[in-house]
Length: 301
Image (cartoon, rainbow, N blue to C red):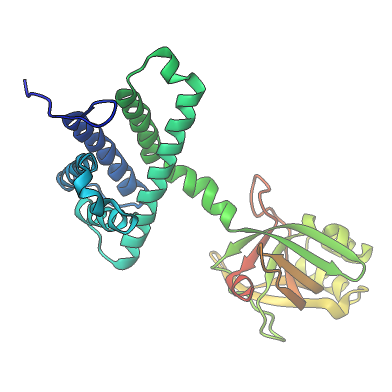
């Protein structure tokens, strides 16, 4: 059995081997979770090496004479080294993503552990703090590595790509959620401006009665267009050519809006006389958004 190296500080006693072990395990799990979240194939040997470096670095913190190596810049540099050792990074962009995720997971695990300790009052029930933090931290990191990618892909990223959009047609306003669609390259053939695609059900209340009748009562596109041409909004009417899978040389009915405002948080870009392509189906089964917003419109903000 290896004798414990004891470093006596004021109080309490801190065991260097326990510090090494606890930090090695935590760094290993966090680096593994980072690889998973960054979509990088984990290389166990590299992660072990980086985690061992992290454990040694934690032990060095117990030695007052090494305080210079634990300044904020030094910690950031050492974190970079750990990520570089642990993960096969093919480019600068991959490194940036992995480094940000490494810190994000660290903060998340630390916050969750502290919150959990307060919730169950670990000190009161007499848990050993080293092992308590280790167990809770490992569980948190494992959950992040296992399910974090799915949560980000299914919830976080879609939420980041949704924007509040307000459209004005004369005295009426329609407000809903738009989703950033980098594949939406539709353009108004008259002005060459980008086109927003919106669900008919979302726009319906902003359209006059004769336009609604033309859109709803005609299953034949030709007859629908004939009715729209003689409607009260004929001057707003646009026919937008498009190509999709299974349909070449298609035509999408569009209506010109007086104003379109996109809520980007700090910025609220406003566009005049933008054409809105009308889609009679549903863009999402769960009604999470009602419009597809071209990237050009968002970038303009």
